[in-house]
Length: 470
Image 1 (cartoon, rainbow, N blue to C red):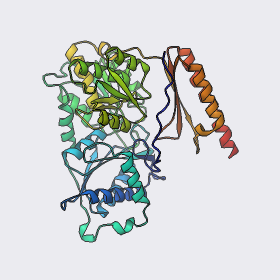
Image 2: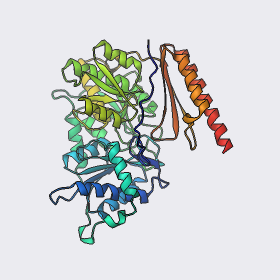
Image 3: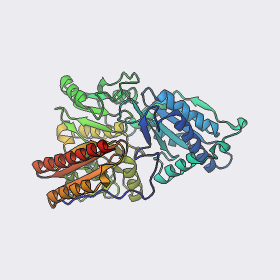
């Protein structure tokens, strides 16, 4: 029978500024201020300048999504890097995986993406990539924080003669388009397919439709008119309803909904039914294993992935290796274990044969390749297993996490007892927002709903009571 899965232990050293996916917060409020961005650029620049050898002047690539505050954060970062002697290459709005790819292909020392991913326009964030295109480790982010806190940072600025330079390049989008297209199997085309793509008014609003059209598809474009405010607003991978409706309206064979920085996706088949990251992981794992392309004898996913995926893989003698939530942890496990497929239920897909971070477009192309190769409809190709009933509720809190309170701990223990031997309970703090995520799954849907609702409501009452007492 299914067992209760507890969240893996977090690292003993706690990062103050960085979360599970870089720095994130409300734009122009701490920590997401231009002053912080400039200091972060200075601190990271000092560290990467120190690592440079042979008189090489370090180079950093900076990209962004389409939210208004990018015009504030991008120049602040640029000022920080230039002030410590790094040269800056600005590429404008491009997907996060494009920045990882450009950092690697241009032999840059550091890559920076200014984005708050699937969050609304009020938020923004900063993600950092090393010269290999992989996200920086926890240890490196801790070192950057330490340098930012160093009162002597001002003394480590470059002399006037040694300041860096900043320049923009015009062909960055084209480089990514060609790289993404190269992930689609040779000999296959998308001719005759009608595809809906929702770009969330975000970073992929130009490149995503172009990639699909150049591979031969007829493309129905949604979310391609960014105005600085409408990123992820009623569209994209967190709100795929518009994409699903458009698939039915236009008689499309597949729908693709990306998030604001295009590092994750949700699909819809020709009936408008949603296809999440777990189903896509199953499809890619099975097809790659059959073709002898799957490395490591399995895949990597997080504690949020459905147990139906685990059963599906086990039936094919493939292993599912779980990590904490966050694509950075998936990537780390993939690198350590030699896996080339990993991802999250939310739609982050890391296919390390093609990319070093989540890439919604490359993952979508793998699903499209299976549809084209088999000649079957997406509903037959993308629905690989029957998921166990699973329910997730979010509980917002103000200041202190309620998970340390004794009454909440007891309520969690009681919920675990209700599921004992029949399912799985997962309680975790969000790495990007002040939320407690309560998730349960089991074969009994009614039991799942009862456990999640009762526990969530208890935590909500505790939060309200604690807030009133402050």
